[in-house]
Each structure stands twice: as C-alpha cells, then as structure tokens.
Image 1 (cartoon, rainbow, N blue to C red):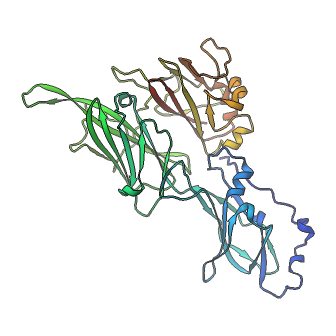
Image 2 (image 1 turned 135 degrees about the vertical axis):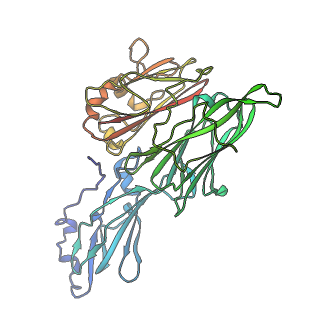
Image 3 (image 1 turned 60 degrees about the horizontal axis):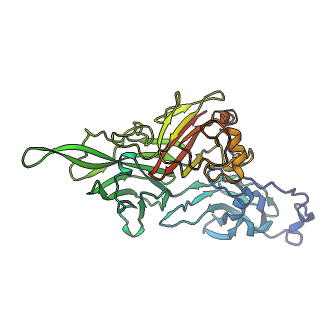
Amino acid sequence: MKKIKYIIPIMSLFGLASCSVEAPFEGAKNEAIGELSKYAIDLDASLINTRAESNNIINDFNIQIKSTDSETKTVFSGTYKEMPEVITLQAGKYKAYASYGTEVMAAFESPFYLGESDEFQIEANKITTNIGTILCKLENVKVSINFHSSIYQNMGDDAYVLVSLNKDSEHSLKFTKNEQRAGYFKHTAENTLVATFHGTIDGVEITETKTLDGVDKGNHYSLTFAKHTYSGDSDEGSIIPSVSVSAAVTIVNQNENITIEEDKLLDDNERPSEGNSSSGENPGTQEPENPGTQEPEGQGKIPSIEAQAPIDLDKVNEVNESSTVVIVFTSQTGFTKFEADIESNDLTDSELRQVGLASHLDLINPGELKDPLQGLGLLQNEQGEDVDSVLGQKIVKFDISKFMTPLSLFPGEHHFIIKVGDDNGSNQCTLKLKI
C-alpha cells in the first residue's frame, strides 16, 4: 500500500558545516559522547488530515529525545523547527517521540497525534543519521453525531446530543442539530462512550441514550440518531401513536482506514427496549442505513440524495479507472451548503494538492479550486454548463467518474463524506470506494 511521508531531505552529511564524521569530536575523542543528526528523524505524517503545507507540518511537530538507560531522562524537548542541526548526547540508548496537536480531555476539532521511534544507540565519536520512521497516529477517540432525515425536521430547537466518556459530565461535548464538527476525547485505560439525546420531537420530550463499551483510541465513532413511530394502546383501548429515538453507529479505525463494525438503524416495528435506552455492547456487523438513501413517508423537505447504479451508498463499492460514480443531490429551495471531505490513508491532502485539488472541497465557495472542479465536471448547472458555484441550484450531479483514473493509482479504500444543506435543513452521506 502506498504511503505518503513528509520527509525532510537529509542534507549531505559530508558537507554539513564542512564537518567530517570525526571533526565534531576533535579534542574530545576519549569522552563517551556521540551526536544525533536532526535529519535522522524521519516523520511519517500521512495520517494527519490537514491543509497545511508539508514543511509547516514538520516544523510544528513537538519532538522529545529521551534516554532509555537505567533512568528515563529527557535530553531534548521542543518543536522540530527549534532543533539544532546536531545534538550532542552521552553514548547510550535513546528513543525519539513526536506529537502533533494538543491533547485535551474533550474538544471539537482537536485531534492529537503521537508516535515514537524504535530504540536507537548513540555511539561514542559517531554521528547517528538514521533512527527509523516515526509514524504519528491518532491518540484520541473521535466522535461525530448525525441526524437522520426522519428526525431532523421534527427536532425542537432545544434538542441536542450530549457525549462523554465514562459519564464524565465535566468534559462532555454538546452536539446540536447544526453542529457539523467532530469531537475528540482523551483516551484512558477503560472507556465507555455515552451519547444521550435530549429534547422534543413533534412536541414530545424524549431522552434516549446510546452506550458503547470498550471504545479505543484511533477510532472514529459516527452515531446517527433517527425517529421511530409505533402504535401503543391507551387506557381506553384505542390505538395512539408513540415516538422513540434510536441510534446506529459506524466505527472506523482512523489509523488503518478500515471499518471495524456497524450497526443498523431500527425499523419502526423494532421497538426500542423499555426505559428508552439502547446498548452498543454488541452492535453487530450489518451495514447502517445511509441517511441519504431513503426518505420516510411525509418527509422530503431537506435535500435528498440518490446514488446512480451501480453505486450503492450502503456498502463499499469496488471500482476501477473506468467506473461510473454519480450521486444526485436535490434541494427544494436551492443549496446553501455543499462540501465534500476525502478521508484516505493513501490519498493525502498534499498528494491531492499536487494535482490541483484538496481533501476538503467546497462547491459553494470553491476559491482556488474552481478550475480543477470545473475540469472534473463538479461545477455545472442542470444544463451541463460550467458555473462558479452551485449556490442556489436545486439539482447537483456529483459525478467523479473523471477522477477514477488518477484515483486508480492509489489502491485501498477512500471515503467521500458529502454534506449538503438548504433553507429546510441538512443531509449527508458517505461514498465508500475501494480500488
């Protein structure tokens, strides 16, 4: 599998400040000291989804060099940019650690990445120029909340989902119906994710909890809440409608870009268990109902989403360079939001920018990406004419068939998370492609 690494080129060690291997140690050859070249640190930042330039990413990494001999001791701590060209160290065994971002208990859009090298040896009177690659992985538990079209239009403005780990109310995050950001939580030894829906639906006060045990760092837990209507008997024996809420979950390992497990939204005839609670202890492996593939009866005001055959939004689609990949989005009032995020281990933002694209695409405000998006046919009106934006359009054909040729050079799984909105509300889907 192809990995993209942002590696600072190793400067010619023969010309490093006009030094030979022996030169730095002149007058100190009998002392048990050696040196570590800054460029021995090979950082793999391919898992970090950022729009920053690769050199800036590297410069912002926090680096620690620690002795692993009898007593762990930090001998250097600072950003990569702050590191000297050469660090003088006592001969012995060491490890290098690299991190990106700030680790917090809970925050929106605050990922924290961490990696460490294998143990390496500093030898007396020698310069160490290679300690291996440090792959920085996501250390947080990532959570996103989605609202199925069956619930979105009927939610009161007071409705929200409160998410915490281990029922830690002090460090919880509140997801409202318009909150599109992902939340990041610090991982501890034992983690239980608790997501509780609070608010009114059709004027009925509802509290519904989804619990997942054993959540792990590096995983993205995407929860989709939906409304269900079923019949219940009144005291007089007449049939009255009742409303409940359930949540489905998709778990994706961000560090491996693989789907671990998914559970399906309940049908209306599958009444949730008593007590308005659902457990995620055994979510199963069935594909979840995609929010954009079905519209419940009486709905349809928010944007609709329909994939054209052979594409299926409920599964991973195996494609090649000649595949046709089309999704049609329809709005009753005209689109005010249309964004797509590309999540892939093998197709990074840096790689995409080399061909004029990016991992985040905004068809309402394309900016510098207008020309390449027009070239792909993504910025067109219903008549097939190029436009500067899809703002106000009622039908948008998201056709990335032309993108299949360059995409076929990157074997693996690629996710396109597409979020759209108009005056009536929002909707989203995830297009999963596998080369």
